[in-house]
Image 1 (cartoon, helix red, strand yellow):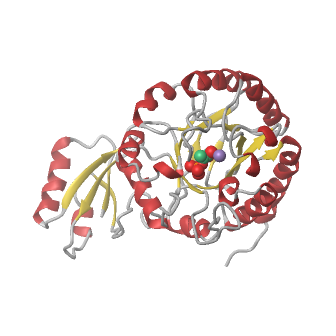
Image 2: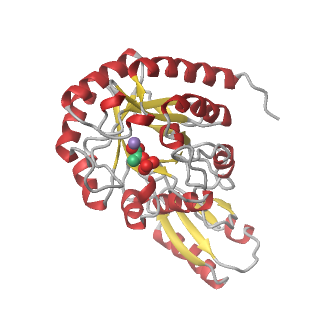
Length: 339
Ligand code: PEP
Ligand code: MN
């Protein structure tokens, strides 16, 4: 059960609630986020939640039996909106395009990409400085020094940054230079990393694991929320199946399902989801129709010489048409009737 506490509740009242939970053999977990305080009651006994709901200091109470509770729509029916400042929002009807290279490669590349994003009215740039690569001999990113240059150019032009954090030790160094922490597919169940990101007040985009189920993704998001950070986005980036004709299988089904199960925004990553340049657009458009709240897409001035993921990366020329079609599809979606 989720018990949302009233603002400025005192310790005595909290103790009173946890005692009552104790009496009915429910374990109390206190969760304090940047927005509110909660008690998550976990137990097996059938109870009438009204007996807890009437206690002083309780603002709201819901029974949620799944293990992913705070991220569930059963408790919070309103969609979460991630507010990055300067009127850049994701979720709850606010759609964003995030674009940029797989890897940050050079200052010149950053400058060219920033200009490309400005020309196309895009507010969020992606680009990895810590790269998870299948081979240890592949390019593994420019690290913190690269991030500082990335930040210098984006900050000067009002562009927000999303970039991947691979381990807890990197968080402090990155914190001042980014707007969204990306958790990659390979770290989707790195619970220590999720715990640490949950202690921050910066948004996190959590990717689905290579072979992760929807419930595992939601459980990972619950780690972040229950540690105190409510600003989470879920990202469908394709899963591994028996099919080898493309890099991953973009699970279109996950988009409406995640939107139904959770109040968190759902992000479409068709670049990794299909892994083939010419299919990134149709798969992204399908994701938009399915209900996604943003796309995150790999673009590069010369994909043929990109340091990583060139085969799934759009050129800036292709990307221009892509953005137009994404925007048209977002508008088209608004006109659809829902039953
Ligand atoms: C990336 O975004 O470049 C990336 C490495 O993604 P994923 O974790 O989905 O493989
Ligand atoms: Mn990539």
